[in-house]
Length: 307
Ligand SMILES: [Zn+2]
Picture 1 (cartoon, rainbow, N blue to C red):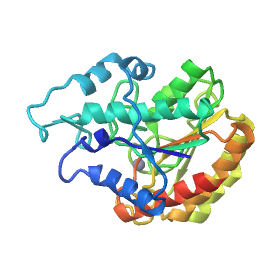
Picture 2 (cartoon, helix red, strand yellow):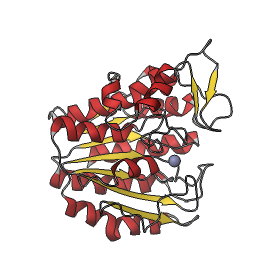
Picture 3 (cartoon, protein in one colour):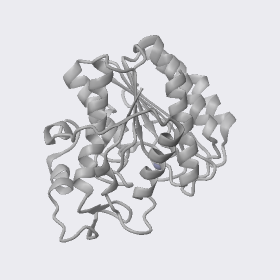
Picture 4 (spheres, helix red, strand yellow):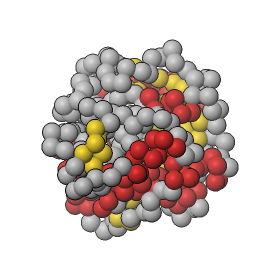
């Protein structure tokens, strides 16, 4: 098990009042460090433009990387909640780079599991648009790297963030080498992720009504999502690890507990062990109540370590 983070990820400053704050990442890193003081954090390299452009258009890459700012607190609003600051380019490069580095580590046989505590998050970013706090789609960049550089043909993306990963789905909806599985609250931002959206048979969306809770969440995963994942025989599992489904999260009403994230992670670990030599790369997505985020990240990492 390895832990990745990077100090550059703290320098993306979308401004006071924006829920996607540097304090989120500090909370996750501090909580995991306190729980496992012997686990060392590594600082992975930045992604290159060519790596980003496996999934993103050149004009989006230029917008994120080439915008200029007079001082550290200047901002450029892409939309109401998606904001660039002077440190955003380096943060986004290192968030995406962490996933690439982690894919290389697990496919190189150096380690079975990697958790990347990075920000900004990624799963709403499409090929051409940054949105929903997300600049580059970190996990999609990692998946494309696994396919292009390691020749994988069965890459599973498991997205348990409370929001639908519209960007990830759109990027891979016609790519049979990727299976995309998502549970998410509906209705909720970004409004996508209907059960009828199945890509080319490689997308499974399970929208959940507000206040659904633990039992139904586990039931959906046990019912057909985990069996579908098992049948896919993934060579690697990439996790969009959002913890905003927690009952104390201010952004949604899914009523999950930290234990639910631990449970699902354990189930995914068993499938990774069966088909993928244990290979899991997990990347932080959402989670906006700091205490809920701490508890959930600990439950998640505990299950990655144990399973
Ligand atoms: Zn989310």
